[in-house]
Picture 1 (cartoon, rainbow, N blue to C red):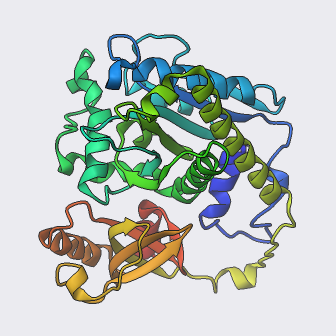
Picture 2 (picture 1 turned 180 degrees about the vertical axis):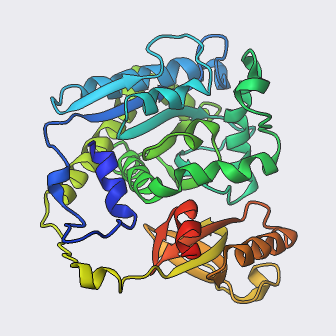
Length: 368
């Protein structure tokens, strides 16, 4: 069992059986490699953005290879790449690389562009785009599918220009969102503290390259090639090495935190046959309507007239919910209602005794 698989099992409710250890570190073998897949954005016929004449595909590749070189100096880490040269790689293939090796982390590396002198790094995790700018960033990265052959077949009618096409992308990554955010925080913190770069923070948006990975995943925008100071820095060997060192250090810190978590004292919960029957699921469905780094008062005027909005905070990210029902069908009706209020990306989440669980599992449990 990989570290990623083990963490997934303890972050989601575990099926309780007779006299079992719910969180047993023995399930994880320290002899297993910590697997990281690095994804240099674009490549080949797709140069990415070419702000100030610099090529995103070349810069992202250089940084990714340097990150991998640093990580590979650690014997316990195994690094894979979606590409190691300036070749075109279809977008749908990139997550498959990570899934095929059962990776613990997926890190996609890009560079930004803008019509203004905007500057700063930003690291994205999958989730609803909280504003128009985040949607535009995702749309720009997703649009490379139009350069690929058979894109209509490979992407099953997905339209990167349509907000409605993006609604469901975040659902595949729900189980790993908190771990993804943690890695993103470490990366952005290193950019600020180690390289003295401006950070635009950790953000959420819908990137195709992240939506189908089955592990914590982030997309790093190193900065803006179109900025007259940032572009030359990112195009320089010194700049690329500094940014790569920051990303690699964040990955190593993340891994050490996870190792500590796995090695720490287990939480034991022995359940005998007589107690087993007393444990019943307490399922609650809610509709997540928004998320962001800024906390807002949950007054109706701030949410298009919706009464009863609640907020939860985790890793400096605030999530806003509407409704709380034990019935999935009621939650579906509530989702339709909030979408009519303008929250087109609203989606249903489920909790069992306050712990977030997969929707499919919640629906099955609520039938019993």
